[in-house]
Image 1 (cartoon, chains in turn yellow, brown):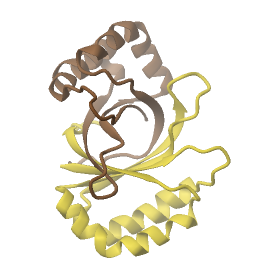
Image 2 (cartoon, one colour):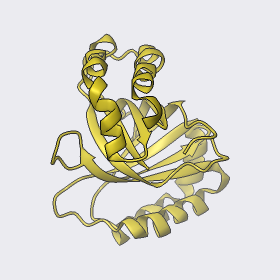
Image 3 (tube, chains in turn cyan, yellow):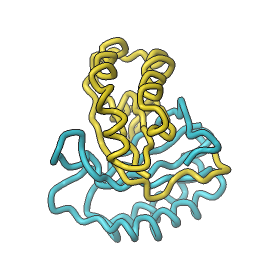
Length: 110
Length: 110
């Protein structure tokens, strides 16, 4: 399993509508990707590693797929529509990363 | 629920022993933290957002806890021992972030 992490770097004065991101944008992504998106998670940055330090990222989402190919095949055809929704919740440009899930969440946890 | 993400920035020529990280270091963290660590996940960076681009992070772990306080209470007393293990798998200095889990993994997924 792989995850695609979309990470919005913290920046003083940046705009980010966490409710829109969770309730509108991520649902749009999941709907458009269909079953290739096994599930997704959303994080809201609270703090950095040192006292008083802001988080590196204001918000992140992680889209879980069977493979890089299944992500690309499901996201690609809708990329334009999904990316066009970004200004509706932020003026930040996200950092993308694809990772292999080496250890996943246990079934009974969370 | 909160997650503490420990992220190792990609750097050309950096040393990172993914097996040791998964099999030794993360088990040490979980053992020392006890039940305050609800569970943890581990990622291995594969690629960045553009073709040929390296991942922002070579590896990441995410430690899930009920609260920032429960993390601090369980990690703090063992921080010295845990941090002293880092040179056994990498010469990179990690970036830490604490996030609120806004949307978690569904129970039946993964």
